[in-house]
Length: 309
Image 1: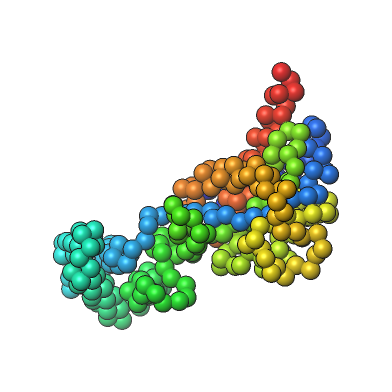
Image 2: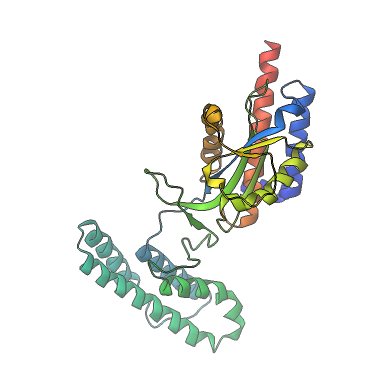
């Protein structure tokens, strides 16, 4: 599906999304007026990565550099294949036993091994200038993994195969941190005749504050559905938004049940998309739009089946 989404591109998937809305209107599953009032919320579109730790990232960065060096015939002074794996296992065991001084000692060993491999490859590349471009990105990622620390601010590397991954905290007790990209999801406030549709989906790279996204999200929703919005309902995460619109209202108490009703739609998006994203922010955009296409077409098909029964 990832390759198909890439071949389709964001433009064609958006056109498919608009056509699915037109089909829903023609078949009586929804009316244009159903989309004049929407609920806008954000969720996290997770990437298919394991939980990142410093030890695991440094070990993996060294392995990738050693493999690439062997592929291109660069003889390294030492690969640290055996002692590196032992150090990683010891770090994990010491951390599990809460013996953090011993665990940090093994972490320093992993950092030293990675630095030695980086310096060795850099020296050998001086004699192989045709390989400088090949090693540019792997060496850059390895240096970032080696130099980053736990509490430092700024962009970090959480995955070597998907360096665009961001760490997002949504305040969930069972999942304090999620690794992926923030996504804005708009659903109609009231359920349509055919079911609960998805009006619009858009990725938000950079983990922006929710309220600062409305100025770009609202025009995109109106372009997709083809009607002007009469009411946009948000939660407290959008408080202090910079959209100068009178029709943006924070969730009132009488609409609390509607937020609960559309929550399964967002959870369905996380379930369908999670684990199927490969790499690149372009794929993130395509995957989010493809989910909206899938959700709309599935709702229309169910409506037609019920009408024919």
